[in-house]
Length: 112
Length: 110
Image (tube, rainbow over all chains, first blue to last red; front, side, top):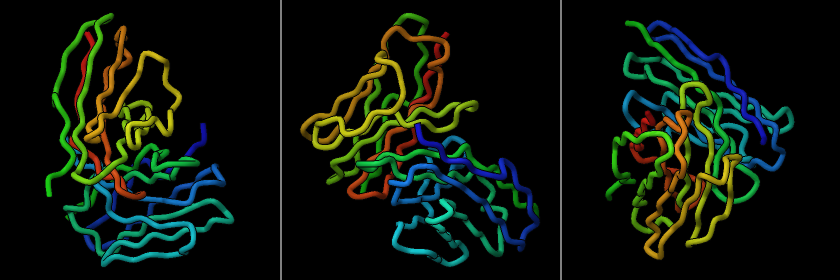
């Protein structure tokens, strides 16, 4: 099937620093790109998303950029806090419907 | 508004048995998708149902099946369980592209 590649797999930053996670996708038909945060013992939680007709979207400390030509999108978290520590997943929509292909995840650790 | 609920939360089965997992979507959501999450393979799409019809299917063997009822509740079934089926099974419901996940069912196959 179509792939979504995500990197880095682990990321450690100090509190207050920025964190950047990058993803690439292969399906040209993908038009929806969400980011999820998963904490231990919980299901993934949608934190931000972007559609193919938009290049950038921001929500407080979180921003996502999309380059459809290059087929890559990124998550930017500024002023990181210890509670941002979790596993983050990027995803891309599958041709039709609402189903998603996910990246393998990035384990983010924010140290005080 | 109640979130996505999944039952049971934990399940232990032995090889060769079958299992049925249940998902109740957010009220008003007509799409339900199922995913398998394992440490090695990550989150993998199983299938999506919309208004009782399977709209999309991932690359899993025929032992994995699902269905959706008229009230949008969904079930997935795994027959002839294998050790490799041990995983967290997640259900997500959506009204549009935004998918909201339940807490998952942790299946352990012994």
